[in-house]
Image (cartoon, rainbow, N blue to C red; front, side):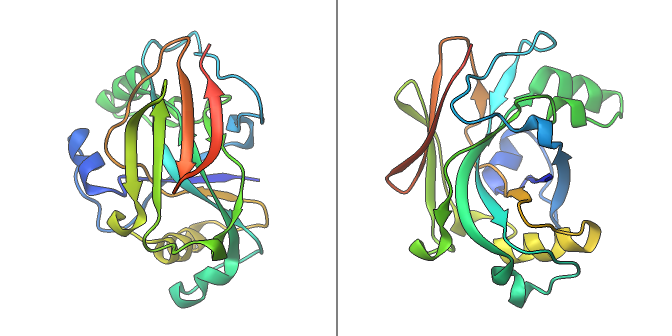
Length: 202
């Protein structure tokens, strides 16, 4: 199982980090060891003092595919969730400054929170609300209508480079509002009004 992630897929988030708006999806991958196991707490790693949350809609691939055409992409996933792409922002910034790859700032153990999965057919995927609460206060909220690249394009483009396999996860990008976590915080993710996950920061 691999976790394919999309960077800079919401205009306002790209702007808040002073990044350019990409014409095509920007990919990076988290290893399977990045997945935080259900009901586990997230422990701030010793190598970072600036861990940020980034809430994202997550797709679960339901069958293998390669060179998938956009019009058939909907056949390759049947469940959705919401999760967090944890980022060691200080480490990422230092690596970027030196022109180095920054996978370790995104792919460390526990850096991917994924909530419970729901049937995609229960929702309008082109107009899907999601949000993240920190200690009961909304810190991020997004709607899939604001994505630069929609689910179909993401699946089609990613399948050019990576064979998609059953069980693979795709994190589809974060809206504006990313920010730091501290020990004692509680993060709660929602799709529409449904609570999908809750994770404690240690």
